[in-house]
Length: 472
Image (cartoon, rainbow, N blue to C red; front, side, top):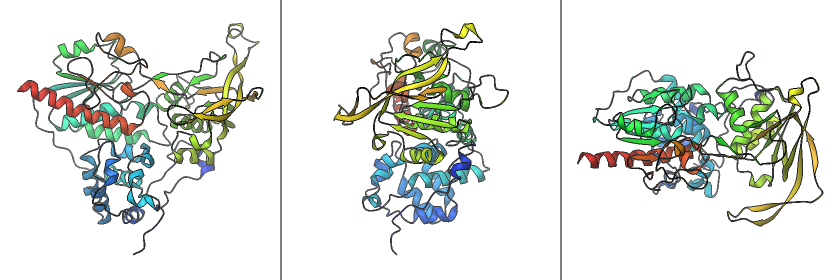
């Protein structure tokens, strides 16, 4: 039988319609599409795709289950390695990980591994009515700080081994960046809620509205009988450019903007934390967060959304799929441009606003690509005299985040690097403190969901070995 050279297309919402609603853009495979896509897998003996997966999902095995329509069996295979399969099927950058290693991808399009993972997980969540038997307790307690992807993964892996795991979350909902950072149209919150509930069935306890470092300290957790602590607090400290006008009303960090919309439902009429109804929005940055912010601004009713990025389209760090969706929805790409000033105006009706004012526009300068930097990317070089102003009433800075310094400031002896990331042993996640481990964005700075999950798995294994040695 001839090999199908291209992936089976993912059904999606019409671009014009979806740009004005928060419903999920990608609609998912049905059974026939999933089986047809699974049939493309060559079932390679050396399994290169598994090597590309940070949590080492047995990819050929679960795809083989789909070929025979054993969809629940496929889910069981995935669940052996991944605590958040429905999430990973949606937001993991498969094109640079498992799918980049796919043998079929050498000549043709690789197998749609992420699409198949999503299909299997959604089918399970929709139809599974059973309950999970609690693992036999081993008598040990572990605390996990943060309920993002690294924390949930670490908690799930330890709970399956019989540990009593308590997750402490600062916000009022569990999920971390999965609920406050990633928009509903990419990752429905009902999906995250189901994944969290699945972990609770293994005995994981989640305490929300607890800020470790304020409400409790790590030392107090040990005093309460926890034998190890995992820090998975993410990277929630936004970065700004340091240009004039960043203090104007109408300037947001992407972190604040997305949190207000995703977690606090700022778009609702009676929201307690509303965002302004901007007509023209500038988003500065080129990563997935920038795409999320730009596409969210469209859905809030903006007439024009400009994405300002200092390199070329080829070098955009965002996923190709997200860039394509943004283009289809009408985001205007201002490429090879760098902001130099945010321009404001005073509100004559309110004297208190005269100091800071409101956003009126953003001045950008044209760039061209010069020599490669230390990472191999060509440096943007500003072209003198090429400045011009884009008229906007809102600016969203999406240029990265750093780990929150609260852990460092409240925990004596916890070592961090110059960027605020917690210093750990690469193979274990062990920090400078005995019994304290860390992983995810709290260590690396802002990265991907699946890399954070991989770090959580690594730490869970190391914590188990650490406590087992104490027993001996």
